[in-house]
Structure formats: C-alpha cells, structure tokens
Length: 151
Image 1 (cartoon, rainbow, N blue to C red):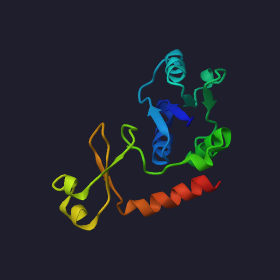
Image 2: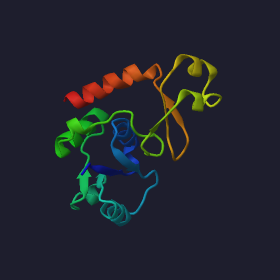
Image 3: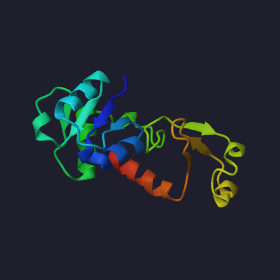
Image 4: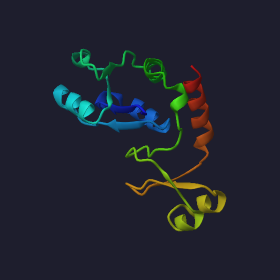
C-alpha cells in the first residue's frame, strides 16, 4: 500500500515537494491541536510529518529533524525507503488530487493562446479544475526530482 502523508503547517515547502514527487500529501495550513493532528493521521492511515517536538512519541509521527528541504526529503526517503515509488507531476500541487489527461481541444480557450499553440499534452485536476502542462519550469523540476531520488 502506498505511503500517505499528513504534513503540518510548519512544513509547507515539504508538502509541495512531496506532491511534485507524486505522493498523496494532505497539508494542514493552520495550527491544529497536536491531538487533532494525531487523530487525523491515524484516521486516514497517514504518516504525520512535523517539527513539533511534542508529537515525537506517537507511532504515526515522523519528526523532521532539519530545516533544509533537501535534508527533509532525504530523511523521508530513507525512513520509508520510497526512492522507487515516486510518480512525479501526477498530483495537483494545490489540492493533492491525481491529475487526469485532458485532450488539447478540451483546453482551447482555457489556457493562454501561446500555450495552446505550443503544447500538446495537458492534465486536469478533477477537484479544482486547474490545467497543467509541461512548461519551461519542467526541466528544472525534473532535475530537482532526479537529485532528490538519487540520494
């Protein structure tokens, strides 16, 4: 069964990076009580990632030791042994849903004209209806993914 994460408000960049890598990552933007976070994590069978030292003792918690994003990802990959489980660019970065392919004719008028003219592959988030395509930033993102998964 694939690993699922619950990330507390202290680790927003980590949550986004895990979504980029294709992991089911629920991000809690507000400060919740520690017991509520534990209940959410256990109720949804998620590993809770936090820097809150008060939560270290719970079995569903992985205390993230570093403030450095690369070190955080390395810790998670080492702890869960998940280097081979990445599915980059398969989830919405905003709402965590799995993206679905959408045909070029379906995006006409919904993406900038230049993008429509120059791109052929598009994905749709079924929850927030955002449309994704492989933009110029993708090369840099792929390079970062390779670095992260190579460690």
